[in-house]
Image (cartoon, rainbow, N blue to C red; front, side, top):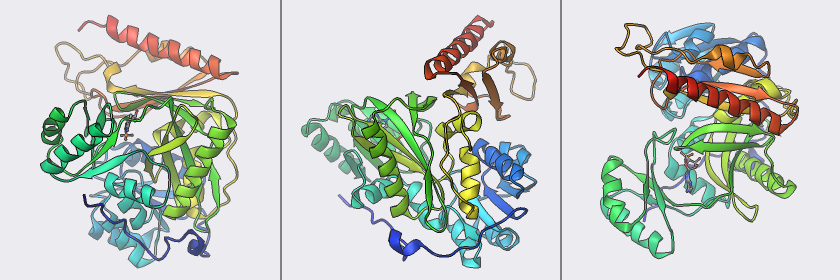
Length: 420
Ligand code: AMP
Protein backbone atom coordinates (compact mmCIF):
# COMPACT_ATOMS: atom_id res chain seq x y z
CA UNK A 1 0.00 0.00 0.00
CA UNK A 2 1.41 3.35 -0.99
CA UNK A 3 2.43 5.61 1.87
CA UNK A 4 2.31 9.22 0.69
CA UNK A 5 5.66 10.82 1.26
CA UNK A 6 5.71 13.66 3.73
CA UNK A 7 6.87 16.84 1.98
CA UNK A 8 10.20 18.02 3.27
CA UNK A 9 11.69 21.48 3.48
CA UNK A 10 15.21 22.57 4.37
CA UNK A 11 13.91 23.52 7.81
CA UNK A 12 12.62 20.02 8.65
CA UNK A 13 15.60 19.46 10.88
CA UNK A 14 14.74 21.01 14.26
CA UNK A 15 18.35 22.03 14.76
CA UNK A 16 18.38 24.05 11.53
CA UNK A 17 15.32 26.12 12.21
CA UNK A 18 16.83 28.52 14.75
CA UNK A 19 16.76 31.59 12.56
CA UNK A 20 16.68 35.16 13.82
CA UNK A 21 13.24 36.62 13.12
CA UNK A 22 12.35 40.15 14.10
CA UNK A 23 9.75 40.59 16.80
CA UNK A 24 6.47 41.85 15.38
CA UNK A 25 5.27 44.57 17.71
CA UNK A 26 1.87 46.22 18.19
CA UNK A 27 0.21 47.95 16.38
CA UNK A 28 1.25 45.68 13.48
CA UNK A 29 -1.56 44.05 11.52
CA UNK A 30 -2.18 40.32 11.70
CA UNK A 31 -4.32 38.69 9.00
CA UNK A 32 -6.52 35.82 10.13
CA UNK A 33 -7.58 33.47 7.36
CA UNK A 34 -11.01 31.97 8.08
CA UNK A 35 -14.03 33.38 9.83
CA UNK A 36 -15.01 30.89 12.56
CA UNK A 37 -15.06 31.17 16.33
CA UNK A 38 -11.35 30.34 16.67
CA UNK A 39 -10.66 33.35 14.48
CA UNK A 40 -12.96 35.54 16.55
CA UNK A 41 -11.19 34.63 19.80
CA UNK A 42 -7.81 35.13 18.10
CA UNK A 43 -8.90 38.57 16.89
CA UNK A 44 -10.08 39.43 20.39
CA UNK A 45 -6.72 38.42 21.92
CA UNK A 46 -4.71 40.21 19.24
CA UNK A 47 -6.71 43.40 19.66
CA UNK A 48 -6.33 43.58 23.41
CA UNK A 49 -2.60 42.96 22.95
CA UNK A 50 -2.54 46.08 20.77
CA UNK A 51 -2.43 44.52 17.30
CA UNK A 52 -4.74 45.30 14.42
CA UNK A 53 -6.49 42.42 12.73
CA UNK A 54 -7.74 41.72 9.24
CA UNK A 55 -10.09 38.77 8.86
CA UNK A 56 -10.49 37.23 5.44
CA UNK A 57 -13.57 35.04 5.10
CA UNK A 58 -16.50 34.60 2.77
CA UNK A 59 -19.24 36.30 4.80
CA UNK A 60 -19.37 39.60 6.65
CA UNK A 61 -21.50 37.83 9.24
CA UNK A 62 -18.83 35.26 10.19
CA UNK A 63 -17.86 35.24 13.90
CA UNK A 64 -14.27 36.42 13.23
CA UNK A 65 -15.45 39.05 10.75
CA UNK A 66 -17.39 40.69 13.56
CA UNK A 67 -14.40 40.80 15.97
CA UNK A 68 -11.61 41.86 13.62
CA UNK A 69 -10.70 45.52 12.93
CA UNK A 70 -11.14 44.92 9.22
CA UNK A 71 -12.84 42.29 7.14
CA UNK A 72 -12.28 41.30 3.54
CA UNK A 73 -15.13 39.26 2.08
CA UNK A 74 -13.16 36.84 -0.10
CA UNK A 75 -12.08 33.21 -0.27
CA UNK A 76 -9.23 32.97 2.31
CA UNK A 77 -7.82 29.99 0.45
CA UNK A 78 -7.40 31.88 -2.83
CA UNK A 79 -3.68 32.46 -3.50
CA UNK A 80 -4.45 35.55 -5.60
CA UNK A 81 -6.37 37.16 -2.74
CA UNK A 82 -3.61 36.38 -0.23
CA UNK A 83 -0.79 37.62 -2.45
CA UNK A 84 -2.71 40.91 -2.83
CA UNK A 85 -2.96 41.51 0.95
CA UNK A 86 0.33 39.90 2.06
CA UNK A 87 2.48 43.00 1.68
CA UNK A 88 0.04 45.10 3.75
CA UNK A 89 0.16 42.92 6.88
CA UNK A 90 3.03 41.87 9.13
CA UNK A 91 1.83 38.34 9.90
CA UNK A 92 -0.67 35.84 8.53
CA UNK A 93 -2.24 33.01 10.46
CA UNK A 94 -5.08 30.54 9.93
CA UNK A 95 -7.93 29.41 12.09
CA UNK A 96 -8.88 26.32 10.07
CA UNK A 97 -7.25 23.44 8.18
CA UNK A 98 -9.44 24.20 5.21
CA UNK A 99 -7.11 27.00 4.03
CA UNK A 100 -5.18 25.85 0.94
CA UNK A 101 -1.41 25.69 1.55
CA UNK A 102 -0.91 27.42 -1.83
CA UNK A 103 -2.50 30.56 -0.36
CA UNK A 104 0.06 30.53 2.46
CA UNK A 105 2.89 29.85 0.02
CA UNK A 106 1.86 32.95 -1.93
CA UNK A 107 2.41 35.09 1.18
CA UNK A 108 5.67 33.30 2.03
CA UNK A 109 6.96 34.19 -1.43
CA UNK A 110 6.46 37.87 -0.59
CA UNK A 111 8.36 37.48 2.70
CA UNK A 112 5.44 38.00 5.10
CA UNK A 113 5.59 35.94 8.29
CA UNK A 114 3.18 33.04 7.84
CA UNK A 115 2.36 30.81 10.80
CA UNK A 116 1.64 27.98 10.39
CA UNK A 117 3.76 27.68 7.25
CA UNK A 118 2.42 26.21 4.02
CA UNK A 119 4.53 23.13 4.79
CA UNK A 120 2.89 22.58 8.19
CA UNK A 121 -0.56 23.32 6.77
CA UNK A 122 -0.01 20.69 4.07
CA UNK A 123 0.66 18.02 6.69
CA UNK A 124 -2.02 18.82 9.26
CA UNK A 125 -4.89 19.01 6.78
CA UNK A 126 -4.41 15.50 5.40
CA UNK A 127 -4.62 12.56 7.79
CA UNK A 128 -2.45 10.44 5.46
CA UNK A 129 0.43 12.92 5.66
CA UNK A 130 -0.17 13.57 9.34
CA UNK A 131 0.00 9.90 10.37
CA UNK A 132 2.93 9.20 8.03
CA UNK A 133 4.80 12.20 9.47
CA UNK A 134 4.25 10.92 13.02
CA UNK A 135 5.25 7.34 12.20
CA UNK A 136 8.32 8.31 10.18
CA UNK A 137 9.59 10.54 13.01
CA UNK A 138 9.04 7.82 15.65
CA UNK A 139 6.35 9.88 17.37
CA UNK A 140 3.94 7.40 19.03
CA UNK A 141 0.83 6.81 16.95
CA UNK A 142 -1.69 3.93 16.84
CA UNK A 143 -1.89 1.36 14.03
CA UNK A 144 -3.19 2.89 10.79
CA UNK A 145 -3.39 2.15 7.07
CA UNK A 146 -3.90 4.39 4.06
CA UNK A 147 -6.72 3.37 1.75
CA UNK A 148 -7.28 4.84 -1.70
CA UNK A 149 -9.51 2.30 -3.48
CA UNK A 150 -12.35 -0.12 -2.80
CA UNK A 151 -9.96 -3.06 -3.23
CA UNK A 152 -7.52 -1.59 -0.69
CA UNK A 153 -10.39 -1.04 1.73
CA UNK A 154 -11.36 -4.71 1.52
CA UNK A 155 -7.78 -5.87 1.84
CA UNK A 156 -7.10 -3.56 4.81
CA UNK A 157 -10.21 -4.66 6.69
CA UNK A 158 -9.26 -8.30 6.23
CA UNK A 159 -5.70 -7.62 7.35
CA UNK A 160 -6.60 -5.57 10.46
CA UNK A 161 -9.38 -7.93 11.61
CA UNK A 162 -7.02 -10.83 10.85
CA UNK A 163 -4.47 -9.18 13.17
CA UNK A 164 -7.03 -9.21 15.99
CA UNK A 165 -8.66 -5.76 15.68
CA UNK A 166 -12.12 -5.76 17.30
CA UNK A 167 -13.26 -2.66 15.45
CA UNK A 168 -11.69 -0.36 12.89
CA UNK A 169 -12.43 3.26 12.16
CA UNK A 170 -12.31 4.71 8.64
CA UNK A 171 -11.70 8.46 8.47
CA UNK A 172 -11.65 10.63 5.35
CA UNK A 173 -8.14 11.91 4.76
CA UNK A 174 -9.39 15.45 4.35
CA UNK A 175 -12.23 17.65 5.49
CA UNK A 176 -13.58 15.58 8.39
CA UNK A 177 -14.19 17.34 11.66
CA UNK A 178 -16.42 16.98 14.73
CA UNK A 179 -17.01 13.29 13.99
CA UNK A 180 -17.96 13.93 10.35
CA UNK A 181 -16.32 11.78 7.68
CA UNK A 182 -15.84 8.81 10.00
CA UNK A 183 -17.32 5.32 10.07
CA UNK A 184 -16.81 2.42 12.43
CA UNK A 185 -16.46 -1.01 10.79
CA UNK A 186 -17.21 -4.07 12.93
CA UNK A 187 -16.75 -6.90 10.40
CA UNK A 188 -14.79 -7.21 7.12
CA UNK A 189 -18.19 -7.45 5.40
CA UNK A 190 -18.95 -3.81 6.32
CA UNK A 191 -15.84 -2.47 4.61
CA UNK A 192 -17.34 -1.81 1.20
CA UNK A 193 -20.40 -0.04 2.62
CA UNK A 194 -18.06 2.23 4.58
CA UNK A 195 -16.00 2.99 1.46
CA UNK A 196 -19.21 3.94 -0.38
CA UNK A 197 -20.72 5.89 2.53
CA UNK A 198 -17.58 7.98 2.98
CA UNK A 199 -17.72 9.02 -0.68
CA UNK A 200 -15.03 6.77 -2.23
CA UNK A 201 -12.29 9.21 -1.23
CA UNK A 202 -8.83 8.57 0.29
CA UNK A 203 -9.06 7.35 3.86
CA UNK A 204 -6.99 6.59 6.90
CA UNK A 205 -8.17 3.40 8.58
CA UNK A 206 -7.29 2.87 12.23
CA UNK A 207 -7.57 0.02 14.67
CA UNK A 208 -9.72 0.94 17.66
CA UNK A 209 -7.55 2.13 20.53
CA UNK A 210 -8.86 0.98 23.92
CA UNK A 211 -7.93 4.15 25.72
CA UNK A 212 -8.67 5.04 29.34
CA UNK A 213 -8.74 8.74 28.58
CA UNK A 214 -8.23 11.42 25.98
CA UNK A 215 -6.01 14.44 26.54
CA UNK A 216 -4.64 17.35 24.55
CA UNK A 217 -1.34 19.13 24.89
CA UNK A 218 -0.93 22.56 23.33
CA UNK A 219 2.56 23.80 22.59
CA UNK A 220 3.34 27.40 21.65
CA UNK A 221 6.49 27.73 19.55
CA UNK A 222 8.15 30.90 18.31
CA UNK A 223 10.24 31.46 15.16
CA UNK A 224 13.47 31.06 17.18
CA UNK A 225 12.39 27.59 18.30
CA UNK A 226 11.60 28.46 21.92
CA UNK A 227 8.54 26.70 23.30
CA UNK A 228 6.04 26.80 26.12
CA UNK A 229 3.56 24.06 26.91
CA UNK A 230 0.09 24.81 28.23
CA UNK A 231 -1.31 22.69 31.08
CA UNK A 232 -2.50 19.25 29.93
CA UNK A 233 -6.26 19.03 29.40
CA UNK A 234 -8.50 15.97 29.83
CA UNK A 235 -11.13 15.69 27.10
CA UNK A 236 -14.37 13.79 26.79
CA UNK A 237 -15.83 13.30 23.32
CA UNK A 238 -19.39 12.29 22.53
CA UNK A 239 -20.28 11.06 19.02
CA UNK A 240 -16.82 12.16 17.87
CA UNK A 241 -17.34 15.78 19.06
CA UNK A 242 -15.58 17.32 22.02
CA UNK A 243 -18.11 17.49 24.85
CA UNK A 244 -16.05 18.66 27.80
CA UNK A 245 -12.50 19.65 28.77
CA UNK A 246 -11.16 19.55 32.32
CA UNK A 247 -8.13 21.40 33.63
CA UNK A 248 -6.06 20.14 35.32
CA UNK A 249 -6.17 16.63 33.89
CA UNK A 250 -5.99 13.93 36.57
CA UNK A 251 -2.88 12.12 35.27
CA UNK A 252 0.15 10.48 36.85
CA UNK A 253 3.35 12.54 36.72
CA UNK A 254 4.84 9.92 34.36
CA UNK A 255 1.96 10.20 31.88
CA UNK A 256 2.01 13.99 32.06
CA UNK A 257 5.73 13.96 31.37
CA UNK A 258 5.34 11.54 28.45
CA UNK A 259 2.51 13.60 26.93
CA UNK A 260 4.32 16.92 27.21
CA UNK A 261 7.49 15.39 25.84
CA UNK A 262 5.67 13.85 22.87
CA UNK A 263 3.91 17.13 22.06
CA UNK A 264 7.13 19.15 22.22
CA UNK A 265 9.01 16.68 20.03
CA UNK A 266 6.14 16.76 17.53
CA UNK A 267 6.24 20.57 17.42
CA UNK A 268 10.01 20.53 16.90
CA UNK A 269 9.95 17.95 14.13
CA UNK A 270 7.16 19.84 12.41
CA UNK A 271 9.05 23.12 12.85
CA UNK A 272 5.74 24.77 13.63
CA UNK A 273 5.41 28.44 14.57
CA UNK A 274 2.36 29.38 16.64
CA UNK A 275 0.29 26.79 18.46
CA UNK A 276 0.36 23.07 17.90
CA UNK A 277 -2.47 21.19 19.62
CA UNK A 278 -1.77 17.49 19.93
CA UNK A 279 -4.71 15.22 20.77
CA UNK A 280 -3.67 11.98 22.45
CA UNK A 281 -5.09 8.72 23.77
CA UNK A 282 -3.99 7.57 27.23
CA UNK A 283 -3.51 3.79 27.34
CA UNK A 284 -4.25 1.61 30.40
CA UNK A 285 -0.52 1.31 31.13
CA UNK A 286 -0.10 5.11 31.15
CA UNK A 287 1.54 5.41 27.72
CA UNK A 288 0.20 7.96 25.24
CA UNK A 289 -0.44 7.85 21.47
CA UNK A 290 -1.06 10.82 19.19
CA UNK A 291 -4.50 10.76 17.60
CA UNK A 292 -4.32 13.96 15.61
CA UNK A 293 -2.90 17.45 15.64
CA UNK A 294 -3.91 20.98 14.71
CA UNK A 295 -1.59 23.90 14.01
CA UNK A 296 -3.92 26.52 15.48
CA UNK A 297 -5.90 27.17 18.67
CA UNK A 298 -7.91 24.13 19.75
CA UNK A 299 -11.37 23.75 21.21
CA UNK A 300 -9.99 22.18 24.39
CA UNK A 301 -7.79 25.24 24.98
CA UNK A 302 -10.82 27.49 25.46
CA UNK A 303 -10.67 26.54 29.12
CA UNK A 304 -7.60 28.79 29.45
CA UNK A 305 -9.74 31.85 28.65
CA UNK A 306 -10.98 32.03 32.23
CA UNK A 307 -8.71 29.89 34.34
CA UNK A 308 -5.06 30.31 33.34
CA UNK A 309 -2.47 33.09 33.42
CA UNK A 310 -2.57 33.35 29.61
CA UNK A 311 -5.15 32.12 27.13
CA UNK A 312 -4.22 29.88 24.21
CA UNK A 313 -5.16 32.74 21.89
CA UNK A 314 -2.71 35.13 23.56
CA UNK A 315 -0.04 32.44 23.37
CA UNK A 316 -0.66 31.95 19.64
CA UNK A 317 -0.34 35.68 18.95
CA UNK A 318 2.79 35.89 21.14
CA UNK A 319 4.33 32.88 19.38
CA UNK A 320 3.78 34.09 15.82
CA UNK A 321 5.02 37.57 16.71
CA UNK A 322 8.17 36.28 18.45
CA UNK A 323 7.23 37.62 21.90
CA UNK A 324 8.36 35.76 25.05
CA UNK A 325 6.56 32.51 25.80
CA UNK A 326 6.52 32.02 29.57
CA UNK A 327 4.93 28.97 31.18
CA UNK A 328 1.15 29.20 31.49
CA UNK A 329 -0.09 28.51 35.00
CA UNK A 330 -3.50 27.32 36.10
CA UNK A 331 -5.27 29.98 38.16
CA UNK A 332 -8.04 27.64 39.29
CA UNK A 333 -9.55 24.30 38.27
CA UNK A 334 -12.02 24.66 35.42
CA UNK A 335 -14.32 22.75 33.08
CA UNK A 336 -15.23 23.86 29.56
CA UNK A 337 -18.43 22.43 28.08
CA UNK A 338 -19.35 22.87 24.42
CA UNK A 339 -22.83 24.09 23.59
CA UNK A 340 -24.11 22.36 20.45
CA UNK A 341 -27.01 23.52 18.28
CA UNK A 342 -29.11 20.65 19.65
CA UNK A 343 -29.74 22.78 22.76
CA UNK A 344 -31.64 25.42 20.76
CA UNK A 345 -35.35 24.44 20.68
CA UNK A 346 -37.01 24.77 17.27
CA UNK A 347 -40.21 26.84 17.13
CA UNK A 348 -43.23 24.94 15.89
CA UNK A 349 -44.31 26.09 13.34
CA UNK A 350 -40.93 27.70 12.53
CA UNK A 351 -41.04 31.44 13.15
CA UNK A 352 -39.63 33.79 10.54
CA UNK A 353 -36.68 34.84 12.68
CA UNK A 354 -33.10 35.47 11.64
CA UNK A 355 -31.90 32.34 13.40
CA UNK A 356 -34.19 29.97 11.55
CA UNK A 357 -36.99 29.77 14.08
CA UNK A 358 -34.99 28.74 17.15
CA UNK A 359 -35.60 29.94 20.69
CA UNK A 360 -32.67 30.50 22.97
CA UNK A 361 -31.72 28.21 25.84
CA UNK A 362 -32.38 29.41 29.37
CA UNK A 363 -29.14 31.30 29.94
CA UNK A 364 -30.47 33.20 32.96
CA UNK A 365 -30.51 30.10 35.15
CA UNK A 366 -27.04 29.03 34.00
CA UNK A 367 -25.60 32.49 34.62
CA UNK A 368 -27.08 32.68 38.11
CA UNK A 369 -24.06 30.56 39.07
CA UNK A 370 -21.28 33.10 39.51
CA UNK A 371 -18.59 30.54 38.59
CA UNK A 372 -20.03 30.15 35.08
CA UNK A 373 -19.13 32.22 32.02
CA UNK A 374 -21.00 32.01 28.75
CA UNK A 375 -19.32 32.40 25.35
CA UNK A 376 -21.61 32.45 22.31
CA UNK A 377 -20.24 32.64 18.77
CA UNK A 378 -23.29 34.20 17.09
CA UNK A 379 -23.90 31.34 14.65
CA UNK A 380 -27.23 30.04 13.38
CA UNK A 381 -28.19 26.91 15.37
CA UNK A 382 -27.86 23.55 13.63
CA UNK A 383 -27.83 20.01 15.00
CA UNK A 384 -24.28 19.16 16.14
CA UNK A 385 -22.93 22.65 15.39
CA UNK A 386 -20.66 24.28 17.97
CA UNK A 387 -22.58 27.38 19.03
CA UNK A 388 -20.61 28.41 22.08
CA UNK A 389 -19.21 27.09 25.33
CA UNK A 390 -19.50 27.43 29.07
CA UNK A 391 -16.55 27.62 31.44
CA UNK A 392 -17.08 26.72 35.09
CA UNK A 393 -14.39 27.31 37.66
CA UNK A 394 -14.20 25.93 41.19
CA UNK A 395 -11.95 25.71 44.22
CA UNK A 396 -11.45 22.08 43.27
CA UNK A 397 -11.77 20.13 40.02
CA UNK A 398 -14.77 18.28 41.53
CA UNK A 399 -16.52 21.52 42.34
CA UNK A 400 -16.03 22.87 38.80
CA UNK A 401 -17.30 19.61 37.34
CA UNK A 402 -20.36 19.56 39.61
CA UNK A 403 -21.31 23.10 38.49
CA UNK A 404 -20.79 22.22 34.81
CA UNK A 405 -22.89 19.07 35.14
CA UNK A 406 -25.70 20.95 36.86
CA UNK A 407 -25.71 23.58 34.09
CA UNK A 408 -25.84 21.06 31.25
CA UNK A 409 -28.56 19.04 32.98
CA UNK A 410 -30.54 22.21 33.46
CA UNK A 411 -30.15 23.23 29.78
CA UNK A 412 -31.14 19.77 28.57
CA UNK A 413 -34.17 19.65 30.88
CA UNK A 414 -35.25 23.08 29.70
CA UNK A 415 -34.87 21.95 26.09
CA UNK A 416 -36.86 18.77 26.69
CA UNK A 417 -39.65 20.69 28.40
CA UNK A 418 -40.13 23.03 25.43
CA UNK A 419 -43.14 22.27 23.19
CA UNK A 420 -41.97 20.27 20.15
P1 AMP B 1 -10.75 12.47 15.46
O1 AMP B 1 -11.63 13.17 14.47
O2 AMP B 1 -9.67 11.66 14.83
O3 AMP B 1 -10.23 13.42 16.51
O4 AMP B 1 -11.70 11.46 16.24
C1 AMP B 1 -12.77 11.93 17.04
C2 AMP B 1 -12.93 11.04 18.25
O5 AMP B 1 -13.24 9.70 17.81
C3 AMP B 1 -11.69 10.89 19.10
O6 AMP B 1 -11.54 11.97 19.98
C4 AMP B 1 -11.99 9.58 19.81
O7 AMP B 1 -12.94 9.77 20.84
C5 AMP B 1 -12.63 8.77 18.70
N1 AMP B 1 -11.57 8.02 17.98
C6 AMP B 1 -10.87 8.46 16.92
N2 AMP B 1 -9.97 7.55 16.52
C7 AMP B 1 -10.09 6.50 17.35
C8 AMP B 1 -9.43 5.24 17.46
N3 AMP B 1 -8.47 4.84 16.60
N4 AMP B 1 -9.82 4.42 18.47
C9 AMP B 1 -10.79 4.77 19.34
N5 AMP B 1 -11.46 5.93 19.27
C10 AMP B 1 -11.12 6.80 18.30
